[in-house]
Image (cartoon, rainbow over all chains, first blue to last red):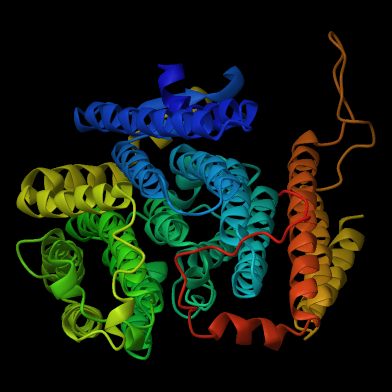
Length: 496
Length: 133
């Protein structure tokens, strides 16, 4: 049991170390890295299977009892996040296969991706605030290296922006963790939850926790703290930005969901603030996207807008809305990473990712048109794809909760999302290429990229068609989030 | 003692923020380092300066007046991580300086906002003779 729970961290770390040992042999590195990614995916799927039966894995690191030792908890939400991290990690590495770029660059990408995955998985399964800070740093270091890889003026400038603002967010989190410890004497999330649920938290603890929420909001790119995201994601190499787009902000969203549901199971002040922040995030993100003229910059603004939906589900705080947020999280990670991947292939075929210089893709690569249409329509919320159900649940939850304005924002943002997607569609697929001789000169690109994109598109359709079971899982996950049995039980030994 | 730590941390944090608002990129990065240290001190102070003995006991002994080891452990971790990140930021800064020639923050945002180069799919090759990352 103890080994299983640390596997999501252990697998990527071991892969990284083994690959480092043979780093001179690029083929070996690729092989080890792919095996590692597959193992992480299998671990994730197994954890989801266990979690679906209601098993919650808990462990104390080093045998130190809670709340002194570091606790790890894998419940339904953590399990599904680990599984989806495995999926996106593997898709990214497969996309990287045989890309026509320098071999050592490719090797470094493989190495750092595993470092990043270890940090992400660690953040998903820890139940200790300081440990969460450490995992945030681990994933930050991986992401810094990945975003700067390859160099060049534009990329390094983007990396600099990304670096400064993310370091600031993490520093705020560290300060918050210190303040919370100073005010409560604990760093264990379960013990904090007990304190807040009993309404015994001091003002100092509130201050620390609010600061923590601010820091998570920067990570999750919530309005008005999202500026760093559209300023940096478009400069990285395509698979890297797809990996970031899928997973990184979602770590922030996960941390928000975890903390808010643990500390305030009932709607309160925090929820009403989050509600407005979420609505503003949705609408500002989508309007920002409307002003952009490059594929990845449009998509980057859409990340911001979509994060708003998830936080909206959290802010409504009914079990249905929370389930909607979890469903949205699952759907969004797959769809968003896929859109970035498709954007990469489209950029290779047309020779540019500026919409003005793209075109003619529908005639040149009809398969790619389908592969773009699936995630794009899903993002906009067209039935029967996954995004429709995600939005449907959120609209229903906000109407049930009597928050009409939220339902209005959801639908309004959906229309604008469709508008952005049709902009990309018209400009890069339907329009004739401005310089037809450039279309497809670089070839179709490696097969691995097409495999990644196709598998993720099939997943989008599968989540849409099999929305019932996924929603059931999300529903159970949301109940588990509110009751948080594992987090509270960890402390039984002490509270008696 | 806590008041002294708190005030020092506050002043350092103010300095760090002020430096981060500077247009010069070098000062921004140094500002992060100063702010990081201010926050480390803040975390240590938030854990209270109780006890005069080192946070260490031998078997069979009880630490009567030992300091609280947890904030020390936290800050130690944070210092190590912060140092690594600072070094990374400095190396990115050095490379940015070599490419830009100047270190203006406005210039950095300007370059990031440039339209995508048409070979976006191809990462820039490392110049020959440069050390490996």
